[in-house]
Image (tube, rainbow, N blue to C red):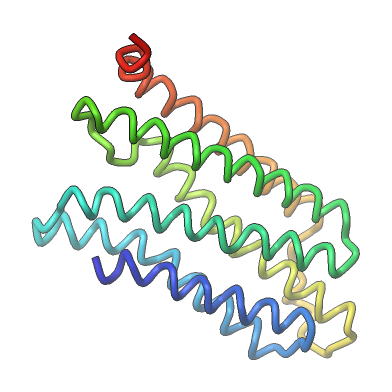
Length: 203
C-alpha cells in the first residue's frame, strides 16, 4: 500500500518540476522530473509483484492500484497539454488534449462500471486491457515529457547534448496515437466484462 500510494506524490512532484522547467529551463530540473516520473511508474510494477510474493493482497489494494493509475494520467496529461501549448506547438497540444479527454472519459466510465459490478460482487481487479494500457501508457507519457523537455531547451537556447533530442516528432505523435487507441480498446474491454452486471442493474 505504501508503494501504491507513493505514486501520487511522486508524479505530482515530477510534473511540478517539469512545469518549472518550462518557464526556467535547466537540465537538472528535467532530469529530476523524469526520474521521479519513472519512479512513480515503477511503483505500479513493484507493488503488485511484492503483494503477490508476500501474499498480502487485499480488496483495498486492488481498488487503490487503479485509482493511483488514474491519478498518474489526471496529473500528467493536462500539464503536458499546457507545456505543449506554452511552446506554441499547437498540433502536439491538440493531440495531447485528445489523449487527455479520451483517458479521462475512459477512467470515469471504468469507475462507473466497477461501481455497478461491485453491487453484484464482481471482481474489480484490473483486466488485461487495463494492464496493457498501463504498460504502454506510462512509458509513452514519460517519453512525451522527455520530448517536451528537450523542445523547451531548444526554444530557450539552453545548451545541451544534441543526442538528447533523438525522438523524431512523427514518432512521438505515433506513440501518442497508439496510446489513444489502446485506451479506447481498454474502455471497450471493460464494457464487455461488466455488461452482464449493467444488464442486471438495468432491470
